[in-house]
Length: 142
Ligand SMILES: CC(C)(COP(=O)(O)OP(=O)(O)OC[C@H]1O[C@@H](n2cnc3c(N)ncnc32)[C@H](O)[C@@H]1OP(=O)(O)O)[C@@H](O)C(=O)NCCC(=O)NCCS
Image 1: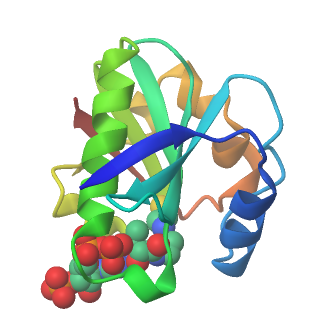
Image 2: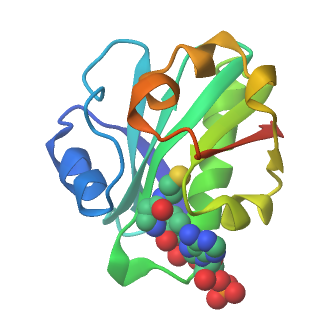
């Protein structure tokens, strides 16, 4: 079992993202919600974030602790983030990734044209600045 807990202190998230080479420069900006993922014992096993609050939201900052990988927790985290997005009105979840596109394709995301991206994506710092133009854009209906 995996639960999401809203994150107040972004410091451990920043450290985890930095260790994975994922963007951190915009973490403290408004319009973003970050969660820690905890297991049934209340132990933190990863993080996830959502950007935007409408029908289109950007899934970002997904990390599972190295020691906990390969046990289906990443899949469970994405499912929980999907539910959190849906509960806040999302109809589509967007994602930018440099080297994990195959992983997310396996979780129901499909490749999307950058020209199709909604404002929440095109105006995100991940899209404009932090991720290279070669980053893949994926989308999933929630
Ligand atoms: C990607 C990540 C969240 C997956 O977490 P996880 O708990 O290991 O995932 P699961 O247990 O659900 O799935 C594991 C499977 O996904 C595969 N996988 C993991 N990362 C992958 C990647 N980048 N590309 C393709 N497949 C990947 C594993 O090889 C494994 O395959 P198997 O089941 O055939 O052995 C985790 O590896 C991670 O935190 N990576 C660093 C941060 C990152 O890349 N985040 C995504 C940025 S958009």
